[in-house]
Length: 199
Image 1: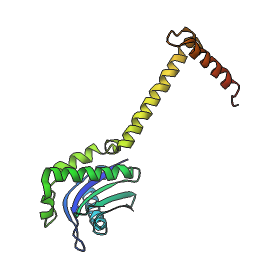
Image 2 (image 1 turned 180 degrees about the horizontal axis):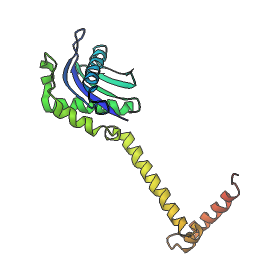
Image 3 (image 1 turned 180 degrees about the vertical axis):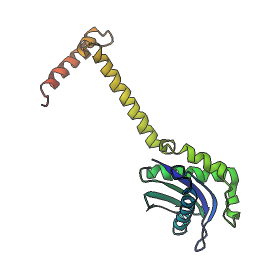
Image 4 (image 1 turned 90 degrees about the vertical axis):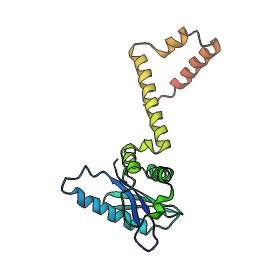
């Protein structure tokens, strides 16, 4: 999963949108190709933003990449260009966070833009680095990742108990924490489940 670019643009209706700022990571391309790739990304982003109406979001597939665009009702547009593996929900979360951060730091200065500029690299460059890991943007993905890690630790813990040669039945018998009723319940459940094994 790779995040290739994050941009903020001013939507201008039928006229071409203006770049408020754009950060790109084209390090995976050859040195002499990077300028052409950057120009191609700018063209792609500008074209898609121009064809997205205010209040709309869309994702457009182009040459192995997805260009995610959200144009707010105010005309402020956010763009994320990523490979196809980068989750769509994370991409739109990145757009929302970057646009909010831009407004918080610079207010409505984006509305006074009359020509392309790179005025917000201090917002976009750190975001491009931070959100390479999509779980930083997508809270659900982060929770799922944490749950998966906990599940792995839990499986490793159970396996380590079994590796030492201790049986769970012996542990239940030795436990002072379990009442007699709980021990009987465990043994009955174990007997009931043992008859239903799959071959």
